[in-house]
Image (cartoon, rainbow, N blue to C red; front, side):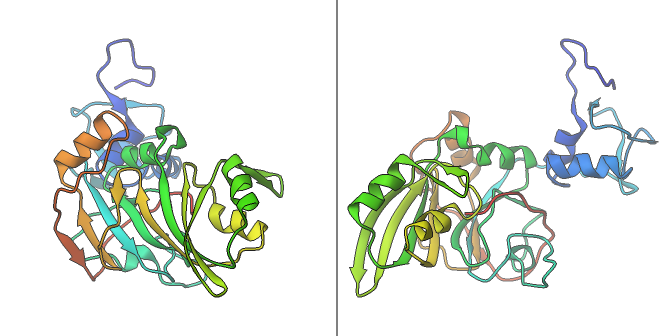
Length: 272
């Protein structure tokens, strides 16, 4: 192993190896290393700037590193009133304490806020989670939003151009009216970023309080008829097809749902 890998060196960064083994995300791996929880060949690691190979013996919290599993991806229908976090300082129920039984340690791709519902992607690979979160992948995230009163055409045009609220710039947000009844209107909302509470803040800036927000698609992956609280694994073939060459159309290959129970998990950044 070496801290400055020469050209042609086949090792990988220690944080990437930990993430791929499902221990944690790359960012969390760097924190664990800083806390002195990771050893390589019996020596406590002082820096994440280290490349390792399968020949190196890696330990986390005194235990050998689990063998890396193939990259896997799940669709999960997050119910409302769950925090996308492993622990909540306020004691609220979390996504990771209410996932289906049988799931391995997983990481969420981004977040949905406490009151938001719908599609949340889960993976056992920290590197994949980071990749899927990047706005540069160009994937459209689609939502259904129930708001107070119907937005005027001028409001929809302004959102499509992007808006600045409290010195925070939000990119283009596409809004279509699905149906309106009384004071309530259902909208179909699309965006390619995912800043903290972006949709709620943008719509409420124009006087449209959001009473319900459901994510129905994340790039090519669709919520479909997946029940709240259930998860289904995306078949490996579909993962390869959709991620191998960037965003592509959705593949409807069947996957087996799972529901109920607990699992061990970690979490990632960002909320819609």
